[in-house]
Structures are given as C-alpha cells and as structure tokens.
Length: 156
Image (cartoon, rainbow, N blue to C red; front, top):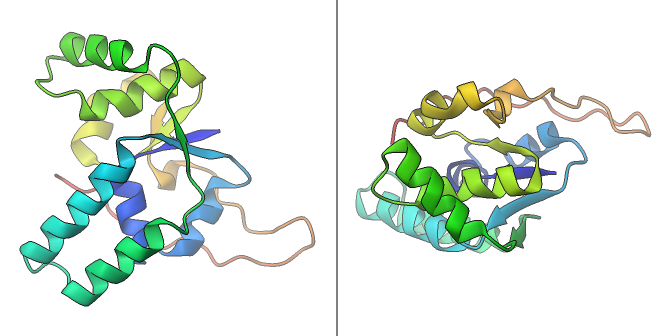
C-alpha cells in the first residue's frame, strides 16, 4: 500500500508524468485522504487560471481524475494526527500533514512530487518520490511496460 499526494495525481492526470508512471508503484494499492479529491481540482483550476495549461487540458485532466485507481481512506484519528504533525513541524496548515498522518497510521510510504514536502520529511524514512521506488519493468506474463520519464520535484 502507498499513499499518493495531490502532486503525483495532478501530474498523472495531466499525462505529463505519464499514466504508465503508476506502473512504478507496482501492484501496490494506492490510497489517499479525502483531501486529494479537493486538492487536485483546485490545483488544475489554478494551473488553467495562470495559463500554465490550456482550459481543454485542465478539463481533460479533471475528467481523468475519476479513472485513477486511488482509494480514499479516512482511518480513525487521521485529523488529530494531522493536527499533531502540523503543530510539531511548525506548519500553519494541515494539508500536507494529512498525507503524512495517513501514511503513518497505515504503516506505509507516502509518494510525493512536492519538493519542499519531500525535503522537509525525507529523513522520516517513509516519504519518497516516484523516482525512489523500484520501477517494475515486466508484468508476470512478461509484457514489457514503458519506463517512467523522470519528472522533477515541484517547488510549490
């Protein structure tokens, strides 16, 4: 099981990271807090507003959000743990802390493309970038999968 954050999902929906990028996650079950389904549309809308992507691409990416196999999770104690993490780290908001809290509560890794989040938390040992995961190059039947294109961390 892997927790994925909004930065990873935005890149996948825009197909800039490539839908095949999810293959680097292997057969892992992908999960995220409910927050993801608010953050991704907000990020896409902001990208369209700032003319970083066209309106058509933004709307197409938004439509792909429903096709990505990520399961929403909200275990008991998630919000309290996110609050605790945010306060401990000196963060005013709990958005990033919610992804960290989910990974902690589920005992799994958090995959992110958020540069500042990764740099601030990589020492915890469970926050990684997709590049740090071992890419899966073959399926059990021997079918080759395309390698993931390197995508830099976002300094947002």
